Length: 288
Image (cartoon, rainbow, N blue to C red; front, side, top):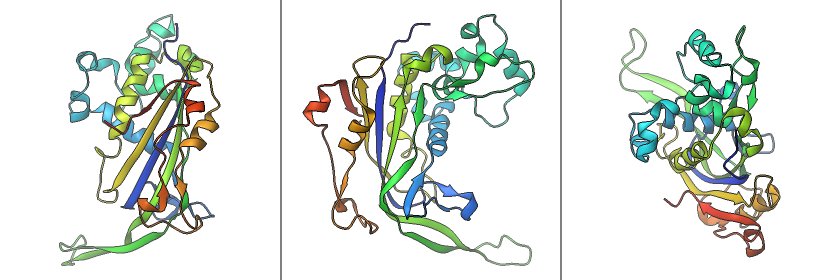
């Protein structure tokens, strides 16, 4: 399989306002936080939102895609789904002597792009693959302040109770700005089956991963920027860290104190020219 896309460096700049961007089950669903006070957003949580958008073929996002995607919706199914039939998937893994021609590779978008470790007795071990796209840990620029409130319910949820409450169940970050890098690596594409069309679908989904997945505990997630920096070749034409450092907002004032608004940061809206010249192109996917 020939690879038809270049390496790329991505960076999500996310403002969180009175929301829980990623609850920690080990801490009673508190927003994830490091010992130094910085907030975290796990790669798994963001990939789950992307998968959910693409899996819903009848949803507004998928139905807004170009006709080529809608017409071939069966090529954009999600492996990491509830209720999947493992026996049927094992057959899909082994229905062709050439794994690149198997139903498994052609069917599951997330397996092609994020990789998979779908292990089955007798399954084709060719499918233990690292994906062409990896998301890094999202970290807040400054420490976060967590607010905890009790949820109340007018209708009782226990027998004999006319009302109910969940003490300290509403746990949100007052304000924070998080940076989450992601990396597009064509080196693994030939082994997972990832194509330029798969990468294009990811780019189309990224602007909506928070807007179209809002919830009661996550109502105000503002994707300020979604930088996608394409390198000039498949090997890469600029170190990732230079690009990420250049586009990370700078905290104004005391960086060790939680922020209270977007105005506490110096936004970065352009890549320096000397770095831009080392790339094939720079896009802010959030400006749709």
